[in-house]
Amino acid sequence: MRNNKLLFTFLLALSCTLILVFGIHIFVLKQMEKPLFENLIVSAYTINVILAVLIFTLLYIFRNKWKSYLGFVFLGGSMLKFLIFFIVFNPIYKSDGVIETVEFAAFFTPYFLSLSFETIFAAKMLNNL
Image: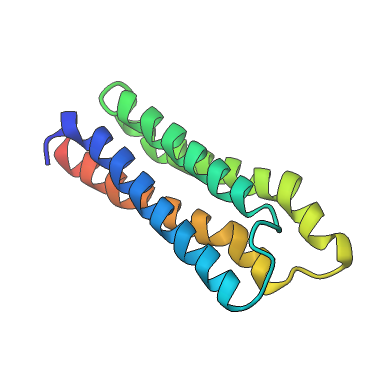
């Protein structure tokens, strides 16, 4: 895969996958008779997509200039995601004293998928350098 197409492919694959998974996630919630748009599910998907795009775009832009530091940029991005979780989502999820499975899934489903895409595409990018 050529590097000039890698960013576009990442954006397209991430967006399509997360839109599909979001639809499946909502369908599962409906089948379980759970509230569909509670637990900050829309915010969780949106924030994870935005951060994944931001992190991978930074990696892509600086892939030649900061080749030795890309791992730190990647780890810093992952730390930023966890920081946002603990500042924004965790207090709301723990407001009743417990994090329920639907609350956990609302944040960590898009988190895991976006992190997987970042990792796979970063590895492809580094292999092409």
